[in-house]
Image (tube, rainbow over all chains, first blue to last red; front, side, top):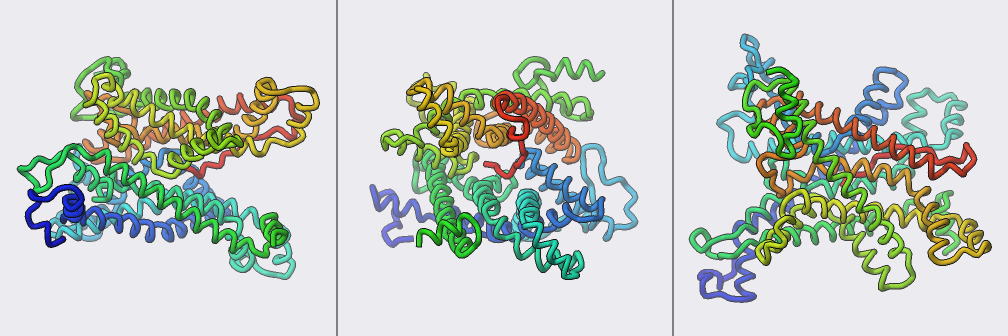
Length: 293
Length: 268
């Protein structure tokens, strides 16, 4: 990185550190912070969409659909989330391969589960056996995002379901009195009003989502936890220009501080948003703001 | 091999009693049920230890955070901030590697690197921080009239705390504390995935479920079994905490009794 890094043996102290922290592998860990942010950026809206669908299904008047929604919320929330992460990654992968298998190899006559093996024809493999490395990584990341969205969708569905019920009943009754159909009531009255009630729960969920990102490691994505373990382990002079002892503790301390700062910043930003949204509202929060001004 | 034989062999496998080798092929449903159930011993152990010890630290931390003395308030605030603001997964990793480096200082610290003590300590501190925040919130919402009445009747100091403040705090915090207990049990599944080694394949329920899923490439059997066990544990927690809740609220008129409302929107 820096010009003086060409011969690490002669370095010491601060300049050694500067060179050490800018090696190629350390660049990988900085990039993986980007992976975490990317995951958050994709998962948050995706989970919100799942949650919205789940909450809408749960309050549907069609009974089986309502059961489906309620079941989705109850099951995902009643079981350790990490079990779901481990489950969905394999289950989704096999599900996609099975569908492709049905579509691409209709004349395959052997069973898919042979003892302890899951066998699909070569064209149905995901990603294809001869695909490039980045395709494998992207596919793994895609599965991880989908898993996160499904699990956190259930939590979001719970929040939105509660928020929909918090909208004053009188509002819906007025809409009905004006002759709106249930669909119009739902989209024009309920949905626009529920967000004020959903925001505290959703911001709590956002903090939880941030704290769940290290679980990416368990899903086989090369994220910051992976790199912290890789880089922190003891290195001898034979394999690297920068030998050091077991520094994993310090790497994880750095991760701890990173997450602390991340959650703190989110907290401050969410507080601001909440203040802005309650401004002028006929709630106790809005009333307190009015009195203070 | 009959199912009873399997239970005898693997029922206590997770604590090192019984057959040494895990099943390698022809996995039966009975084996999966038995081994995953045997792993639950560890989940229940971690959960109970952390809950019982964490309760006392949580009370202390809540009192500290509510105190007007900055010497007590600042450390409590920081304790809660650090443990609630960072992922439990990272806390486990950091603690494990910190304990590893302590181990090289003196053999006294050896047991810290094994899960039964090291992970229990992390879970204890973590749940103390989360419940401490819950108790703190409850402490702030104790009705003013209650403490004024206590003053009027001449309660003071320790007596007032033990007879008035503390029971009211628990009563108000109990529904949220029940959720915290449920999520603590869920969080125990992280232990063996975060550095702490499963020595001689003695792991928790998720460890065995993962073992079966890896060996059979079929996640549709072991994980639902695990889910079933956890739903059972959750039901037990809800009923036990419900009993305590009834006792805490027994002096209130029937309608006012705080009903346990399950609002599970929290994980670490």
